[in-house]
Amino acid sequence: MATTDPKQINGLDTLAFKKTIGEIKKNPELAQCKFRVRNQWVTCDDNRSEAQGFYAAGAERKHEHDFKFRAGEPALLAGKDEGANPVEFLLSALSGCMTTTIAYYAALNGEKIEKMESTYEGELNLQGLLGLAENVRPGYQKIQVNFKINSSAPAEHFEKYYHFSPVYDVVSKSVPVDVKIETY
View (spheres, rainbow, N blue to C red):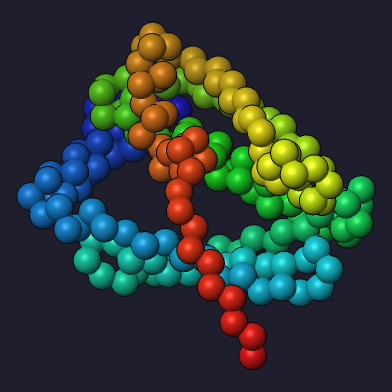
């Protein structure tokens, strides 16, 4: 939501954020980040993830609060439906990242957003997950995103901004995932 403070646009302190950008321009190594989540399986479909610390601006950091996520599966997939399933978390991550990226870029360009809503729908074929069809991937075959933005800025501006979203980049271009499994 827009405010009357000229340095606050879309809730973002643009002066503080531009200072951060300036520091990274002077010291590119400050741009390196590592975000972490720790997961613990409970039983059946129930597992819990927690985000506590991360590495940014050349040092280890802690969130002001621990963030906990509970994953599950719907009863249709023999789950207990006590948490969103992981593919829904993926859509949530995509929505949060794309929305924030658009809001930040709009703010940095002086474009006020009065309201922004979006919907995300992923098409998934269970034959891939269940190993029933070799030619069907286990993940989403397609994700449809629809934004509605109330702003005086034209839609073309917002179409440029979401491409900078890290989660959009990971999902749309794929990223290597190194997996190591040990037993104890």
